[in-house]
Length: 90
Image 1: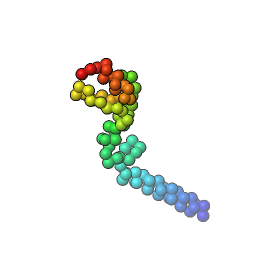
Image 2: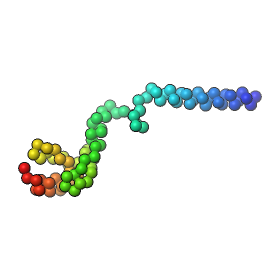
Image 3: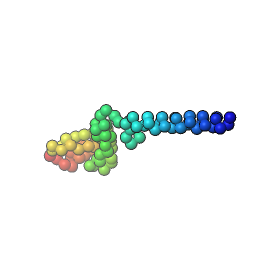
Image 4: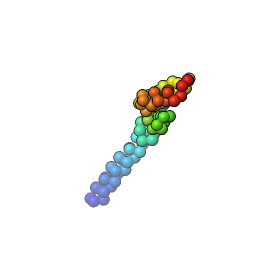
């Protein structure tokens, strides 16, 4: 009787283990999270950029972006952008 109960428990555990393994093959997961429909835009917005004035790194999505002399610069604040413009006149 004990063998039968033990066998049923083992087969049940094996069933759930195999089911979980095979479900993992069907779902595309990359680096522990699901793929987003627009991965390039998300990665670009979360990219860290360095402020050329105070050398602080900020995410590009919250940076103050200015185009100066046909080049794009990212600043941590408006004050740094004004300071950069005064130090580098076009």
